[in-house]
Length: 295
Image 1 (cartoon, rainbow, N blue to C red):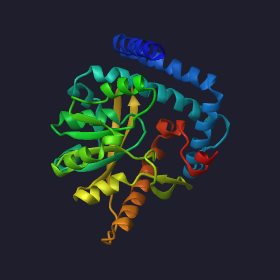
Image 2 (cartoon, rainbow, N blue to C red):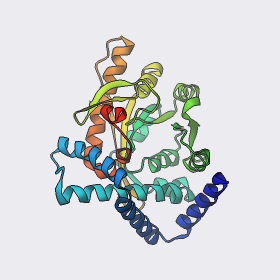
Image 3 (tube, rainbow, N blue to C red):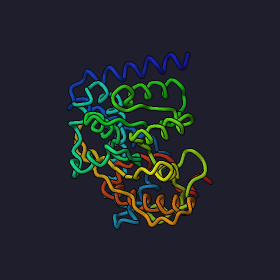
Image 4 (tube, one colour):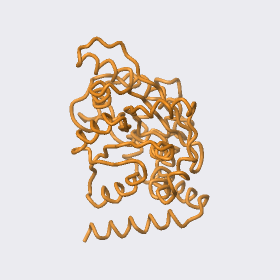
């Protein structure tokens, strides 16, 4: 019964997001985000604690009116992301791809045609970037975390690119499809700012200890494909700006050391990307750092 009701609710939300004019849809999302901020004190405290670390490391206020405004904006930006998950898949890959401007895209489009591992983040909205890749005639395989309840996972899975130049695969069954795609000269896209699959590389992010997934570096080294970090920031309703960085590290031939070095370099680029718009880092809505997971 609960699953059936959830399914009805998700389909209704999908219909509303699709039918509303863009300005009205974003206004509704902003209202929901603002209300969420007001009515969820425990989540608000978690987001504030996470963003305070980012702000302390980047010279921003960690208290007071400006900081509270940043935290409130994080809830609004996250609500906008959920709206876009519902709304954007109704457009063609060309329409969605046109929403994204990429710094130096001519260079990156040619670079990606030989295959690459793209490590991105829970930042802004990375999904239109996938549509831009597809609109350029490229193909990507992307693993997806298997969230609960099952009805929500299936609903989101169906809307996140499959059949639109991006093939989604469940994370638990992703290893072979990812390796095969890279060996064909294709692209693999991985969300890499949270370690959800167990052991990772111990490092720091904004000065605090955590572990990051080693999968992106391992895939790149196993297949000889380059590792790229990419981020996509929301500039306005259905408008995004993206940037990419080639991850480079001094390799020794020792696989474990090389994976660690590349993951460390990836972490530093992630800090750079998140610093541009920390209020759009929606990983902040979950425990991130090592001591958070112990609490």
